[in-house]
Length: 72
Image 1: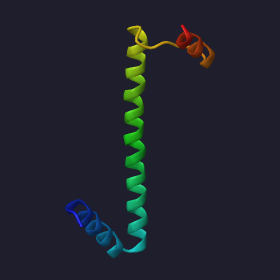
Image 2: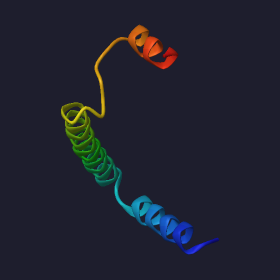
Image 3: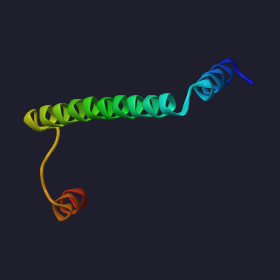
Image 4: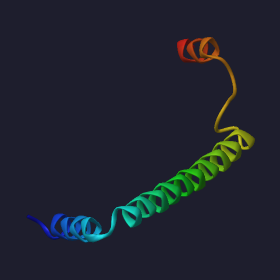
């Protein structure tokens, strides 16, 4: 077992020692933090896509437009 796996296992065991209500609270906290991380990543990706579009590195269009462009 590597260090990361054993640390993860230790965390799991610590959580299992918590009362059920505290475990549920922890799950909710982790879920909300993951949602916030995904939101920040999405905001960064949208900003990157907008910048690419403004500099001409990305184009808008339909799938048909893309196929036509690739066929050239």
